[in-house]
Image 1: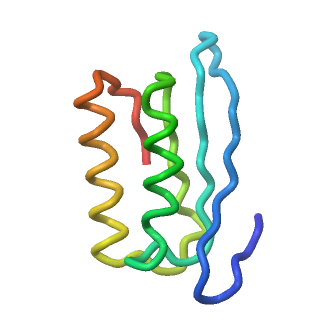
Image 2: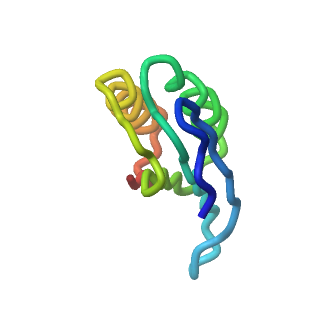
Length: 90
């Protein structure tokens, strides 16, 4: 596990396949997912949605999540559902 310096946000992106051969993108988030940093997560996930498959967002190493971060997660789910993808997990 990578600890993020206080006041920052970063992520690690892992690409894999599940036991059925379906594409899985796992985004391991670290640090603070807040108004100043939520756009970083939004940017990476928006690029992944058209690829299809599952998108997993791991918040295990997030020390702070504010309403902007939560709003970003909700809007990303809506974007994925509207694009026809339902393989979404938090």
